Image (tube, rainbow, N blue to C red; front, side, top):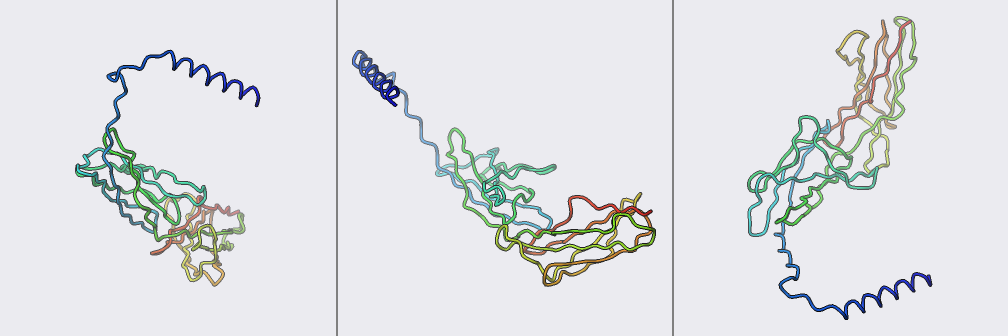
Length: 246
């Protein structure tokens, strides 16, 4: 600490001495004050579908002027998993948010976050000030299947394969509780074929549990899907479960 204090004292003394020996610079050489940027405002609306499609539309306005076409914006959602805002990047075949003449914008994107807490941010440019829209909440929430089980994985021809799982949702972000009274479709795809067939659609009980069985004649893959509703997104496994017939 003594060394730091000494260095600071020397710096101040040196600066004071230098200042005393300098002549004030001419006013003409003073840095010009940058022009103030025009204030802007972003407003937007959104809608979602059960299969995680997100539609965003809105407008950027500026005080006393018209926002031109070609201004880029960023859609963001708040991730309760990562506890931060993250950009909703356009996927394949999707267009980014860019203003049209007059400042309007729209795009079809993909849902990134459950409990949809969304906003649109305008980064600004040399003449227009940056701004961020008010937050808009998506009414849909997650529904997830826990404990998906297919047994056995190897079986004799025409034996039964059994399926079970528990469907839950999280009305409180991250706190999953049983989701009763929901149809879950069970699917099969036989080896060598491309088409999936549903063979059962059990309804979840008071604990969110569902189950089913299937008599299997040859090798096949199995999957499930919950189709969601007006307030929930769909759920399906990342990959199918293969069962070998001996």
